[in-house]
Amino acid sequence: MTFSFSVTAPPLRLPISEWAAEVRRLEALEFDEVVIADHFTDGYDTEPMVGLTTAAMTTGRLRLRPAVLGVDYRHPVLVHRMAAMLDVVSEGRLTLGMGAGWMTSDYEAAGLAMDEPGARVSRLAEALTVVKGLFGSEPFTFSGDHYTIRGLDGLPKPVQRPHPPFFVGGGSPRVLRLAGREAAIVGVNAGLRAGALGRHAVVDLSPERMKEKIGWVHEGASRAGKSPDDIVLSLNCWLVRVTADSATSVEFLDRMAAQFDITGAELGASPAVLVGTVDSICNKLVTSRSEYGFSHIQLDAGFHPRSLDSIAPIVTTLAGT
Image (cartoon, rainbow, N blue to C red; front, side, top):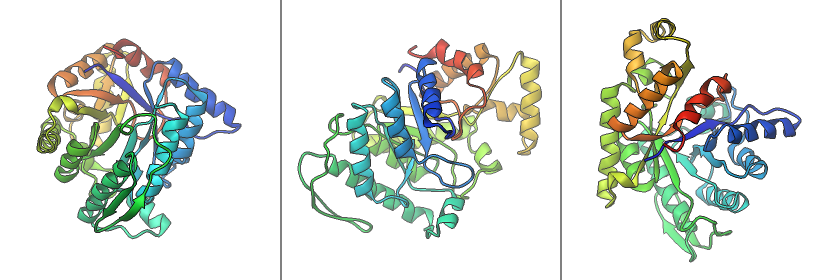
C-alpha cells in the first residue's frame, strides 16, 4: 500500500481565520489527513466534530478524522448524525474514528463513571454496530446490553457508501481483534489500561509487541472473512524528531530513554519512534511498511507538531509512494 500521512490540527487560535489558515497549510504541505483528538483535559482545546467541520469548510482535499470519538462521551445515535452530516458537508472526506475511552482524567473531570475495560470494549462493539446500521438505507432496529434502537432512519445519508471508512485503534487483544473485524483502518497502539501514558506504554511499542498486536488484528479480520490486504494498518508515531546527524540522534534517544528506564537503542527500535535525519526516518518508515505493514502514518501523538517545517520533507519524500 502507498503511504498516507496524518497530522493533528493546530491548537485553537483566534481569530478563527488564522486557525483555518494553519489547517490549509497542512494541505499545502501534502498531508493527507487532519486529526483532532476527543479529550477535554490535559490541554486538549478543540471539540473534534466542530473543529473538523470548520476544517472541511476551509480545505478541499484533506481527509478529516476524529481520533477517536469516545463512546462513553457520545451516544451512537449522536455519533452517526454528526458523522453523516460531516461526510455530506465535506463531500465525502470523513474517516470515522471510534474508541472505548481510556484517559482517566477525562472521566474524573466530567464526573463520568469509568467502567472496567471489558465493559467499555463491549459498549464500543455495540456502538459500532449501531452507527453502521444507521448509515444503512432502511430504518434500523437494535437491542443490546448497552443500546436499544427502534426503527430509526439515520439521516442524512452519507456521501461515502455504504458509509465512511471506520478507524478503530487500540493495544489489547480484544480491541485489536474487534478493530480487525469492524474497521477499514486499524491503529496499532500501546495498551492503555492504566488510563494514562507512561513507561508501560513505551515498552508496549517494542518491535516484538507490535508484531504480536498486528497478529491480533489479522485474527479479527480473518474471523470476519477479511484478508490482511483489506486492512490499512496505522502507526501513531508518538516521538518524532528530525536531527542533523546520527550522533545527535543517539544523544537525544539516550536522554529520552532515561525517563523510561530503558536504553536509547531500545527506544529507537520501536516503530513508533522516529528520530534521525530525514533520510534515516524515511528509510525506517519504508522498512516498517515492509516488516509490519504500516502505511498510514500519524506524525504526532495527539498534539500538533512543534515544527512542521522539519517533518514536512518526510511527507514530501514518501507521500504516494
